[in-house]
Image (tube, rainbow, N blue to C red; front, side):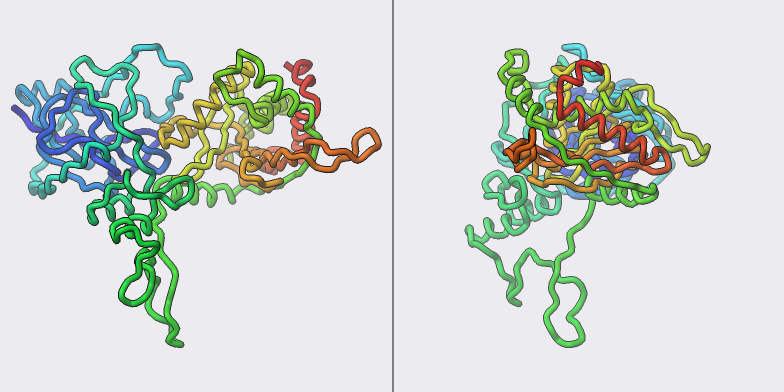
Length: 474
């Protein structure tokens, strides 16, 4: 028997660290190849790491809620056979500094295939085990207490489990909560599945956990009179007034979003607005919903706006170009990889529909539906959120009429789609209630000028005002 350490892999796009969110195994558990060991949170998404070998879990080397660098040993598994056999199974003792091997499906530069062959099981990359330099033995991590069966998170169903994997019973969906809140719940012995969430989009907050632990009280107060979930910033001011405020750690998706917005400011940005009559588009949405071919997909104004953007990019490809500052060149794209901004409980993410120009309306609807569902579940792989050529953000879904969006770093344009609502509008010489919306287009002024940006925005508007225009351009 040989004990192998599984090191945190680079799950793609050059990420350097990740946070251990929850262990799916405990010490003493038997695991099969490709069985999920742990769920981690990177700067872009939640990722489940499969086991590269079969055996018995001997140590969990990293606590939940801790952020570690790529290459750090996170779990020790005892495998059958000698050391040579363990290495042949894909042992995880790769050197921390050598980051060539990555988790299959998340490799840098790879594009996620939109369709996967049914029954295909992605193999696990074997990581050779070099002879490690002498180092002090790692401190053992106390064995985690087993969670109640009804509170353990449900693993995402794999398309075809390994032949040796043990079928696990179905479990309820995992409650939404930040890692610090999960840690607090463990410390207080609170089952998150029993806590009534009050945070945005059903997120369990620190206050919810404390209130539940206190017997369901509406609020929890410390002896000094302040709320228990408030963390004072600094000491009291000089005038003796009590200090307030709260410190919220910024990590994961929100930290990546903040860093991206700082990089976005490097580009000189200009924004154009256009308000238009979309009554014909709304009629087309209603007719499309009644079409049996679209019965299993979501049909919305966003779908037709995405189609309009793809057609307009074909007439003004510079809007999908990239600025290469080092070479002082504008790099035109070969096609359209359309990013769609999605608001999730963990922050804003922008997954990409690959080769959107090659999709018909039904295929585009299916791609958007899969993209949105995966993003909101936090399961979008990092490789699916890079390489976009243009982005749409649907602020109208929040009831917002218009806005000036910020560029996604590396892209030349982003379109904000305002709310579709009936408003007074002059139609055929009379004021009538018509469906209208306002488009907000932000561009990188190094790549396109006002005429190009205006022509692109007018083309998008033309399709939304008269959807039959799409037939002419297709």
